[in-house]
Amino acid sequence: MNTSQTMHIGLDDTDSTKGGCTTYLTAVLIEELKKFNVNYLDYPGLIRLNPNVPWKTRGNGALCLRFTYNIKFEEEIKDTAIKLWDKHSMAKEKGTDPGIVFLKMANIPPELTAFSKKAQTTIVNLKEAMVVVQKYGGEALGQNSCRGIIGATAAIGETLNCDHTYELIAYRKPENNGTKRQVDETSIFEMDKKTYPYTFNNVDVDTKRIIITPRGPDPILLGIRGETPEVVKEAFHLVKTIEPVERWVIFRSNQGTDAHLKHIKPLSKIEPYCSVIVNATVSQNPRVVPLRHIIFSVKDESREVDCAAYEPTGNLRKIAKELKVGDEVQVFGATHKATDIKPLTINLEKIGISKLTQIIRLENPVCPNCGKRLKSMGKTQGFRCEKCKEKFSNLKKKGTTTPRSIKLGLYVTSPRSQRHLTKPIRRYGQEKKNFTTRLIDNWNYVCPN
Ligand code: ATP
Image (cartoon, rainbow, N blue to C red; front, side, top):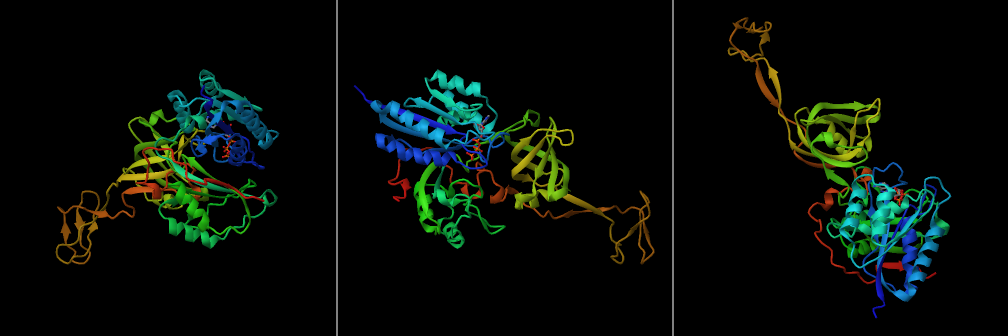
């Protein structure tokens, strides 16, 4: 009799703005389940879902563990996971709606993967999640509104068979939570240089700020993102941590893959709370609105929408400011609902410029005798030279092309304002087409004391 089974555990929405962290809960659970001799089939999945859901705490991340186990431990495994999930859930906080999902099956069905893709790009509801969980004999537990079941289910459904990245997350000792994170900044800049281009979003070059350490009260000390498990581990060892590290784990993720963006055509099909890629033509020149944000409009044959490049988008804002009516662009970004004072707007993450319109300035011709610029005598009245006093009735205004200050190409928002899912320029050309399970030795670590 076969005593081995495969289990997938999905977890979400355990934290609040006051503390907690679902990745930390996952890291602790990984250790706890080792006593049942589980065999992990993959790195833990850190799946970022639609970044535009209005009820997210921070980055809308959901987690998943996949392993084989001896069926005699099944109840104890579930019990351990539920107890830990309960302990680490900030369920008393408003807006925290924890969810945990168990699914026992070797292969994830396409319907579940489709649900996950939908949760990464648009809004889904709890009923949809429960339909798939029940259809495949899964079990789901939730607290408060139970909304976390949506993310927990979606995390299980995303098997990251195509493009994916890795993140090594290191955690603080609990006694240090809430204090300033102690990491040597110079070593982070050096690590960034040494591991280029295989790690990303370590530093923001514009502001010379490090971005691998979060700011909030959560237990994360730092997170290093990269192309392979080996490189994120190497990068971590290059960083000098001043405070002690309690534990670290390498996650496999859809971060930095643009998984949230969906091609929409025509513009009239855009819906709010989604992330879109649209091809359009600039229809209104950029204008600067208070707080130095840039707004311009684009249109196609179906409608016109506004695009906003906010101040923290850095270089993207500078590029947006130079666009002109007639430029052909591909805009990438999150859609925001129209209000009484604001039309439907795309908050820009990237702009691709495929054609720059020529700016032609009409100038009066120069005098054929002395070369001085002629004066116009009025519409269709011809020109007059102020120096030679001669009149020229058959000369015409001459068009000269003003050079554009921007070039064709793809421009991405500054790292400090990038969403977790945004593919940074550094990753272009490194996209993966598949994944063959290969867990490196020591992909997680716990400090022995
Ligand atoms: P963190 O990144 O720190 O883990 P968070 O930003 O992920 O926090 P959550 O606390 O998990 O925020 O809240 C997001 C909530 O939205 C969860 O309950 C999740 O199940 C739900 N959710 C995620 N994606 C969707 C979606 N596409 N449609 C509807 N609900 C969603």
